[in-house]
Image (cartoon, rainbow, N blue to C red; front, side, top):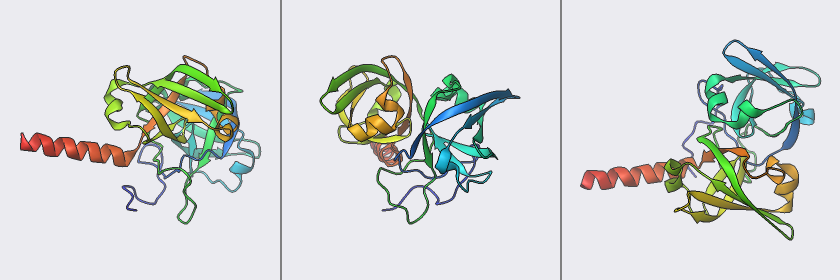
Length: 220
């Protein structure tokens, strides 16, 4: 498969690393410090913090962030204004748990789908359907993104790779069905109606839709 990304880790302002959308840990935020034009977020990564070096890329709730501090019990990330304004990282508090995934390395198994950690915006939990061993979530999505969201297509919510179970184009909504593993291991297992999650659109779907639109426009 050809990937539309370079297999190289960049920092938040220059680009991003690659991720697979398989959340590796649900980790607590242990400190938040305001600095000039950014916020410093410290997360207790546990074993996921082993051998991390400053400059490494980690997805926090699906947002690609650069490690700026490594300490025995916590790892620090600088979150710039752009990320604060367009993701749910602005609502983090000490004690909040976040989805964590370290960047993909060539040769790793891809259990989800290729992600860049570039969030399109936030989606809002619109309805929750709870059944036997399942938790179905409806998300209200900004209308501009709906053309990229299709039944059985890929989407990443708070960094978790998920398959779209239903699409409501008229209501600008999508539904995902969570299995017990996802419920237990990610933020999506506890979100309530009204909560915001980070939305990343599948890059290949975006490219295909954009190409088709351009060809149709050129044909007039």
